[in-house]
Length: 515
Image (cartoon, rainbow, N blue to C red; front, side, top):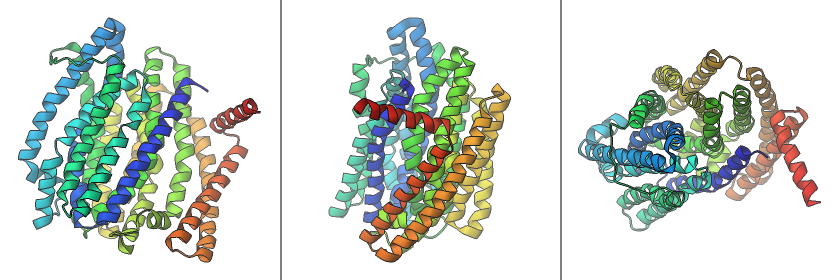
């Protein structure tokens, strides 16, 4: 098995633990506050620093790694360490300034993010925002340290950073209910955001990072980063703007609409974060190196394997989520304050988000492909077109479908974005294995449709026998998922897909060694 494959599997394993905790956080929030005013307030306030600083942090990560390697090749560890410290301190200074401005202008910020909030709901969101806004600074700084660790091929630590973050937030949600004080949740979230930086820093130090109070905006690599950063910043910002548009429009609908979209999006994001983010984190440094070495054959091979891996993983999950949306939401969330109404709202949103699940995943991978070619403009332009379409779809569909229309509009625009990116990639490098990608897509889709039919009738039969009380529903749900997964796996083995053959051969070799 290749080094990249081992790194990806290792990162998936630790990310799985972190994502399960993150999902547990959503379950606890749902049980404590359901789809209500309080959950809308908390989710909106948390998303303000997330949106502001995730744009900055993700854009930095994208440009940081190739420039770190460039510094290291020129001046070794000393020059590379200078570059890391300079970027860290620039982010620190500007992050503090943005946070202070966020506190001062919290009211207009909340108006932008939740135009429909009025009275007590608006006041609470403003107060929560002022508490949590500095958390975004820790997010951006932790992304700088995470980029350094990824450049050093330490993927496991970055994957585990979400564990203390989620544990602290889960504890604060429970404490806010126990002590009947919702502000504990906001303070706990701030501490959780800070924990990601505090957790990763000692590992960065072990890898050779030594903090120094440097600040040099005139450095040539800072200028180069800013030059590359602009298009990436806009490209990353497009995703965040789409999310803001969804929530802003949802704030004009009935109470719980923002929460329903959030819970459904978290279910969708669980898949993206577990599989796609792991593949993208490992493949990006490798593609950057292959691009700089002008190794076109290996570059194309890596693109095909990455895209096909995402297709084979995500299409069946997407179909399964559409077929089993209601029982999934009911089993995972429906308890405490999360009632039948919340289940209905969340499950319909999950169906329409799932239609775009593959597009969301491929967008991240293709973005990394372009960035590795030092082309930051193409993802920006295509993303901006898709953002305009997302806003247009949302404004139309919200009138007919309510909050479900917002999820559907987001999926439609993401699909258009992927088609544009594939077209642009063909113009950029010519052949990139598109025939192989189309074949795998068709085979995976056929297998997933068959799987979906079997899964649907398996659940219908089992739930008819066992009922939809929690235990019976859980047995029906997980049994039908297992049956469906087995059907899909058998079908793609018979279809003789290269990426599947690699996995089956690897498993066969392991068994031979054991025997």
